[in-house]
Amino acid sequence: MSLSCPLCKANDVSEDASSCSSCGSDFSVFKHLKVIEKNRNTRKLTNLTLGSMLVLALVGLGFTYMSAEVPPPKQESITVDEKDLMEQRLAMKDAQITELTAKLDELTATLNSAKDDTEESDYKGNFTVHIVQKGESMWGISKTYHGHGFKHEDIAGHNELDNSHSINVGDTLIIRHD
Image 1 (spheres, rainbow, N blue to C red):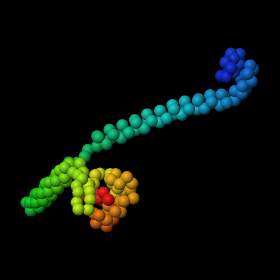
Image 2 (cartoon, rainbow, N blue to C red; image 1 turned 120 degrees about the vertical axis):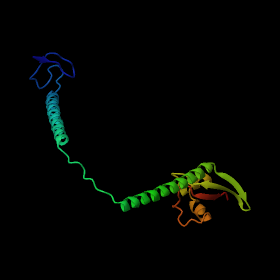
Image 3 (tube, one colour; image 1 turned 135 degrees about the vertical axis):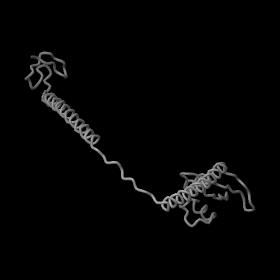
Image 4 (cartoon, rainbow, N blue to C red; image 1 turned 60 degrees about the vertical axis):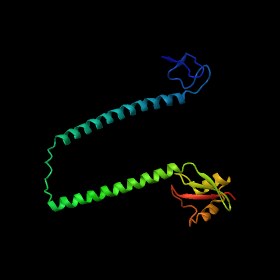
């Protein structure tokens, strides 16, 4: 049986040939590629078989688990005192949730009303009231108002912050335009 050369497409190449009689191309690489492809196909079949066996084993374990009898849960009686205590705790948690929801609503309203910074003037010059938004840093705020971040320490000082790197969402900062 004759093959065709992958490079020059000559059709009179013997299947056992180590090189092409027309162009002299070495076939050893192509032979290795055929072996690799054959091994890959064998591995695919092996993996498919093992995967199928694993699925069957898992299905069998599932049926075993599902068919096992589980005793009903043990009913524990709750005393009247325990029930009253649970109801008190639930009432306290509900009150805390209501209080936190009110605080959250207040903060949300503050943030929504402060989305547009305001510019005002005092006896020393112009300044802007800035509400810190999520993802902002002192460096970025300084860059926004002063064109660079090097005045972040000045902004912290004007706002009496101990740490110029520690700001929180919702904080109000006064940005002076000196």
